[in-house]
Image (cartoon, rainbow, N blue to C red; front, side, top):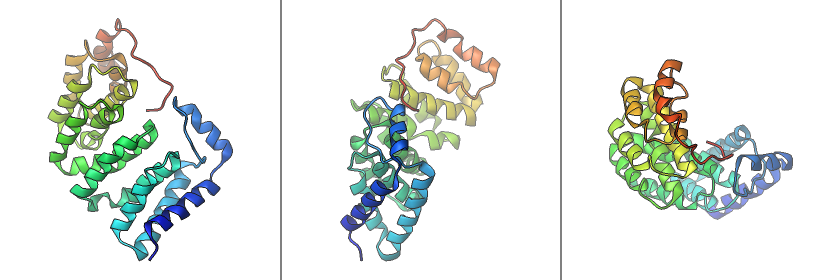
Length: 252
């Protein structure tokens, strides 16, 4: 049996040796903050993570796999945090309250939108969609001083939105975040409303029309991206005279 620390050392060595310096330099373009990257492409990283996940579980338990991921998500290298999520994404249906609390604690280790969205979209989001009671945590995150917890409040409901679930909670979180001036939070909220509008326009579009005179333009524009042109024009008509939202060269 290989210890969690031994697995972590092996993974970190492989990540350090297997990346591309040229690609690592290009990665920085997507972020305002300085990012440490080994220059892995996502498809290659996912293949390596899936193989490693199988290897760990051949000789160790699912709990050991979680321990390895927990140690990797403490680092400041982008690929290590993404790898931690990819190790676990195929096992998320097996996780319960203990793992959910652990993943929630990872929000305080987030340093960029990339490791945030991997964590929330692939681990936390499916767990929220699987248990309505967990939306209470998302509502609490919406009131946090931590920008990444506030973004998580929105992004954690995207899986549910795609299944036409939890619309009252989507509205409550939207109302809590509409006045937020942080561009990362606005982009997360816009993403949530876009997915809700795509999955259930009959329910979501009336809500967008109700908030169009007070929602940040960035939120509305993102929310309307997949709507028909005429509907998009109706929603955005009240946003034309708004001041631009704080913009960013960052990703989603």
